[in-house]
Image (cartoon, rainbow, N blue to C red):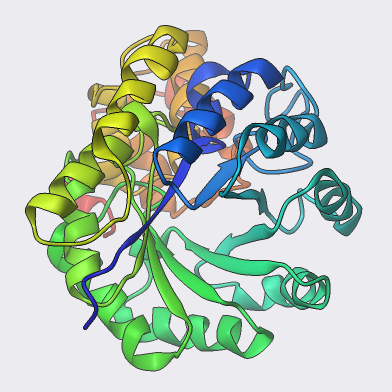
Length: 345
């Protein structure tokens, strides 16, 4: 097995969720330029939920997706600029606009049981000459064998890379490694891993993923991302180097961008607080973090109780309306804190 790992940075996409999608084009250019000079080969940009998501429902971004793409493209010399495409939110017109703005890679994200939803955008993107990375979101909800079956579908559509995505930060290293190993055995496409840090093991999960066949690892500077954030790009670079992997990046340039460009733009530290921890424990989608806090304050219900109930109901991304339903139901009756052991894994 090769000891080369490709780090992909998602500060300018997943990290948007932590700054209410308020990065400006100038911010994007500064961060993308720094990542490029540090040797990061693929940089993901645009609204935190993906292209086409800027709205009252998902949050209005400071700039348009094409503006973000153009800012990033204009700031780099070597890196590919990528966007995230979520079927049902993005359209092929949105993707064409991103192509016109200069992307060379698209990352198509679907729920882990719904690989067939990716067929149209994957095939369209391949015909357009793009590199196509695909995301199996909420991968903790499927056992390794079933997840590999979904990966086979993505490979059949032409995906270049297929990611195990721990959208809820619910996996631990053994589980992350098992899912990556199953995909590695099932398909010839490259395998990636995208970690969230809700249980505090994002870096450990990424290392376990690499040990089991993943060659693309996502991170974000300062861990910027939804809920507890992502595996931290600069920490990934250091940890992989210490573990004997070749990332091809300049660690100290990454640290400088994280420290002097990203950190001053952060509205608060990226930490594992109670809500983020329970979100990961309950296996709830990371972007439910802020809406759950708002619903808890509105209805006078603990965030913990809302998240445990959402986890018990098996909610997925796109079902954010369930947050209000659950909070309202809990507020309308006398109840005890849900028993944690009953949360489905």
